[in-house]
Image (cartoon, rainbow, N blue to C red; front, side):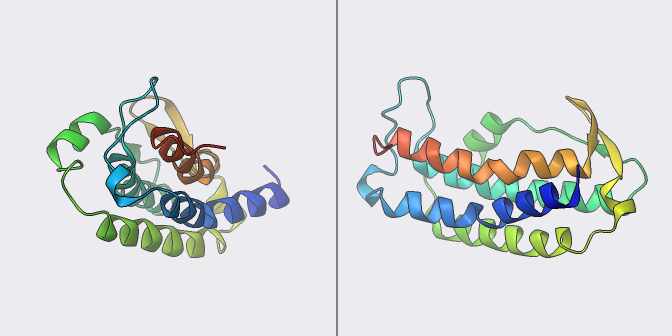
Length: 158
């Protein structure tokens, strides 16, 4: 991956929180627990909590990739977390704060990486080889993809 592509993906990553906030601004509080998308079962509230947990987890994954020698990155069961961590009951404010903080601190790290750090790799328990660049490709799109999913769940897409 060249430097220009990396910079574009970092900017896309930085912009993820804004996309989520804009999507949420279109969803009234009384629709946060609905899911009108027949192909999905996740409400906007559940998605926000997933994003917070995923972003905190992914921030640690990146740090391990950079700091440790060939770390093993463990997968987790998203549905189990949703069912066990009160995704359907909790207010979304603290989870939005966690999302914003994880993204801001991680984007700062990404903007400082050396070529040697960009080349670092580990192993993901489900997909095998997993590099810093792979991480960036996944998480640059993650929040924006879920922002669109929230809009579909609330019937607000388009």
